[in-house]
Length: 201
Image (cartoon, rainbow, N blue to C red):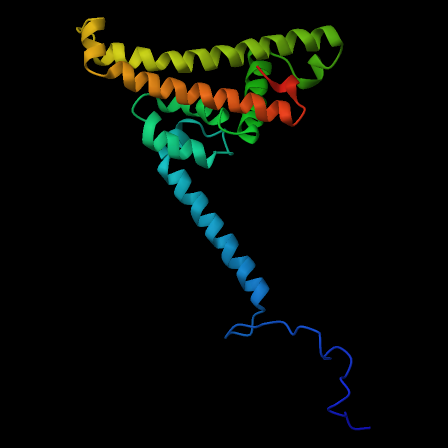
């Protein structure tokens, strides 16, 4: 029987959307997905290039927050050393913070000469380890924030406190300090909202 134009054949009937193809015969959805992936990879590479000094100094970090990258480029780069980038990055997103905790955990285990299995032996050992880890993270955050003041002191060793205030250095420090504090508070809220308050330092 010859196909009747009024009777649609299986798979090509009316109401069924035919896949769209580009000039090279590739399905449109596949092409768009590939294009989006290429753009995402390019954007990711651009972000890493913008903070190349921080990336080089912190090779263990893989989850760089795009908001951190913007802040590093605009505000933090002149106020902090590249080694502080991983702490500042960790304050910008829960994912970056989780990665940072993992990095600190590995470092502390190495420092104490232990393996992950060693701290899982009993609750008391685990509790002591995580208390040490929390203190370590807290110390990192405090030392990073104090870097704001240390850098100003190093840049103007002969100036009095009054002269520093007159030169607007304190305003710049305050802006950066407030920015970091806001990020820390937002991170705490986001972690609490996800029901993981045990991850707070």
